[in-house]
Length: 336
Image (cartoon, rainbow, N blue to C red; front, top):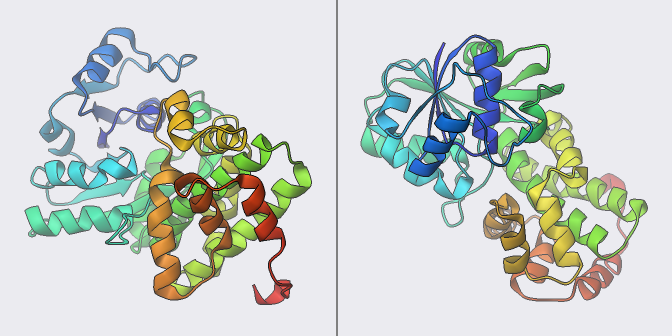
């Protein structure tokens, strides 16, 4: 396949390496010219220092090159830049293209997922375009995917034939791909698990133990599932790779920016200080307000999400917030 990847961060580059090694014609675009220059000259990404990129990957500074004459175009920019990227890309996309979003987030205000934002901008800028759209999600930290370490990903699309095409493109000895028709559920999982991962990091930064982390992750998936069901998503999606699978890895991995950010906050740093130290986008932060808006819209309790917002945006003590969470009214686990 001829594949364009929009975004040259660690995730976009990891996907490019996997797809190029699978024999596909891969072209990577970045809005940052210096990124393209560095990738072309070194064949390495600064945040993936142990990975030498396949020579067959091509790079461009022109977004139209990343969109035209492509069988598949993958959006791999941070969630905050999805809409602007979709505006730039929409008019260059061609009929028959498969669009895949590899970004994870929800837009505050509109409450749109990443694929919904892309569809919105296509309807505004190229409304006659005939295309299929999918979401990619799962326990897939770029650092391990780029090294060819085993994992699985979900290709979510309402059209299962398209999901199978995407799965075939990604399938490799190190990548097992599953399909799922519940695209909304997969995207809700991808956005909300980052918030729970921040909370998990905060616990570790506070010096709390494995019991607390297990409690948080279990109640976190319950919180994610409640809002997902209220939105019409399928319960099994939240028990799968995009839900509990991605939640586990994001809450426990040393590669997780959300987890690391939370740990620094738990040790007393502000979000601004923590994000600056990490030096990369912390997606959970950008999903916070949208998650709270979803909670209010659907009348679903999301106490962990509200707790993270209180700590990060309302400057409350993690210890005070933890005490409040632990003091909530007794409830039946079967009802929540």
